[in-house]
Length: 115
Image (tube, rainbow, N blue to C red):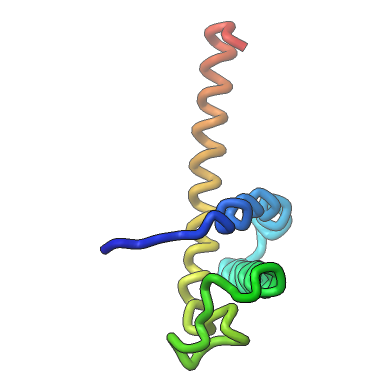
């Protein structure tokens, strides 16, 4: 399964760091609401990134116009909504795991007088 990406994707994916405040704010909200928020946020980022690249480069690297009828201006695919729903919730779990590991390392390092 060969694949490829674009250098433009590195800064786009790097913007994920700005999702932390959203996660912190909605952490206690009901799961379905959080999933829908992740869908909206990811769709918004994908649309704005695609539109911006199309303005700068003359085209969007991921043009969905001809690959599916379920697209919006070729920048987002409506049929990915369920994927983004569960991926967003999955990112919450990964973030929780990273927090737990970081907390354990910090606790252990303080016991060892490393920090």
